[in-house]
Length: 526
Image (cartoon, rainbow, N blue to C red; front, side, top):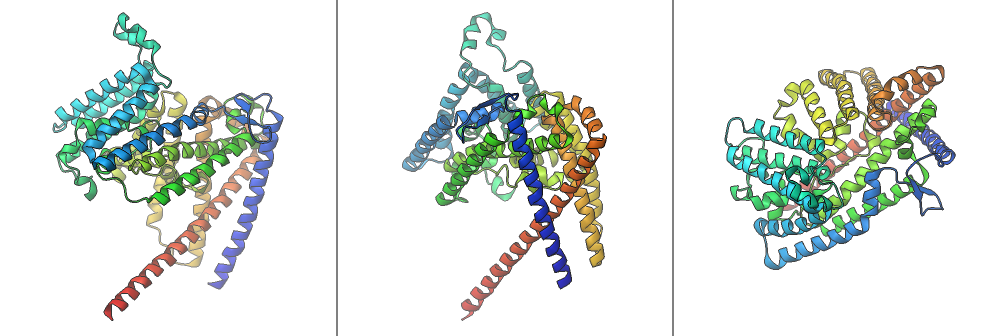
């Protein structure tokens, strides 16, 4: 056993040294790429760190970053007003739904102007559909058809023009606000589906509810609380997503899982992450490369570095956006799932990746799609339906459909292998070693596939996949491909060590808790 421990220690030392060399190479080449082609890249703006340019080529990040001061002021005022009124008047769900509906409506009026009419109209149609047909046999089909139709029509007609409803309404097109309403409405679609399905399952006392959600009384399914849920200001733009039942419960009694000190520390950690993002965009112009055609002139190694950098940029971007709004939601008394519970560089299989990337959406998909479609019994079929919906939900783009279907193709072998691995019993040290090595190779394959899917979806597009494959299969690309696969293999082994260390910590923590319980029993005896 000591020999096995010594071998693992030497392996870990080698892996750490390799990881340091790997990141030294990536950082050096990234800095070189950013310096050599900065004059040819788009979206670079004057920065504030050491006179360097700042990569603001991503419109989502540019808009969020530019509006941070006003967002902090608005949400600071909103949460202060809401919490003060709640405490002064001892309001519960019904009263707080009115307060938050009013505050959120003011917020939406600024964002969308006259287009708020479309939001209220579609939301009302969905509410009456639910209330009238929730107890019917075909309600679930009606609900999904209605909401998917709205989702697609919103995109096709780009949020609709008022002239479609009469020439005398044309003047309202001049008052469409500062933000396209149909982009935000994608999240509202998920909430409308959540309300409809929660109410439908409540009506039939379906077993999908946990004990907490079963306690939500019928009066919580009112229009006021429903509207408050759809347009709740801290979560309206970007989420995270929570079920209607969870929201209504916390609107009635504010969350108590996070203390004031914990919420404050959450905000401090967010500020540190924001500074890290500023360093990233000032020194590494990954997204600017991805949004231009310059990548076609790069070597295979440089394309890999850009793709790897884009994924890390996206992870940090979404993490900052989602945690910002979750922070204000926590202050307002509503806890939502953490969207990025794990770093993108600590995922060696697709299943754990999707549980850690937009995790609240993943939980929503499990609750409202995966389980109703048959769960694990129809897993190989479910992934195609779910990922196609996810692609359409994001946007009507062919490259997103390709990304979704590529993900499904890569996910199916993993599902089959995991299913077979559950029946495999390790009976010796050699068997354990072989199983660990095969798992590491499988992890490297998975990460490679994930990189390819994301390169297609967010960098080179479906038209560039043939070019990428032919480029990697050339003489100078084969050794790069081998090096990339080796790096992913070693990275997977590092993740195994991290997993083992966490399990030991958890085991030690459980042992301490058990010891404390035994000591309390012993003292109680005396």
